[in-house]
Length: 331
Image (cartoon, rainbow, N blue to C red; front, side, top):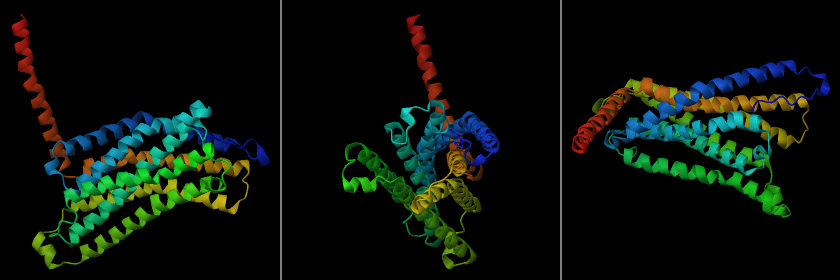
């Protein structure tokens, strides 16, 4: 994955870039050996612990289960993104190849689901806090919202597929040739995938901070929310957008450079590629960080996990007498 295409142009010393390349490769390998199994395990436990008892799920649990599903997708894509291009180096990893486009579309879908689920979680927590007697942020509505998020993310990934199709079947058409611009794809991804949910999340946190300062009759009647739930919300928003912001900043940098139309030398190209790789590494790390936060900050998760383990043990014990009876009959 990590590359330093300096080629000695301009007399730059490639050693600093090579040292950074080795450090990033070591971090990538460490994440694949520890972070990916951790993310797979915690995301799977989060999904199973919540889905085995749908009646006990709350509105935040639905959003965290949605983020866990996106986290599982990111964990599955991590080996191909972090090691595939550098290890293969063949035509399959060409930016215009089917494999590369498919991985990019799946990565963008997981990114959209993750950030929009985080932003909607903040907005629904504000609605639940400000209007506790209404059911606008109910579990039923949240499940439908999460379904729309996945559908919208898949539709948003259509732009990358459209650019790829144009490069193969309509290279001579004027309309399609205008669309064959990676900067346009980056700009659309930046606007739809980061600016919109980012502003929504900031707006939700500002509203929650204002509501928490006001002691209204509704607060005294319905009771104040669990402080751990607010800490979990703030930690999730900060972690998600903190780890995904570098990735979208690199998209912004590429869009600005493409709009200016200036050619870059080998040194700046290498710096841009290293920044892109590092930002993508941080984005993949979010799939392991958020479920760990949920495990340690959500007070109900340990109880859900214990109930799941008891249910699994009862199922295993109920099968044991049947097996023993079969063995006695056959004897």
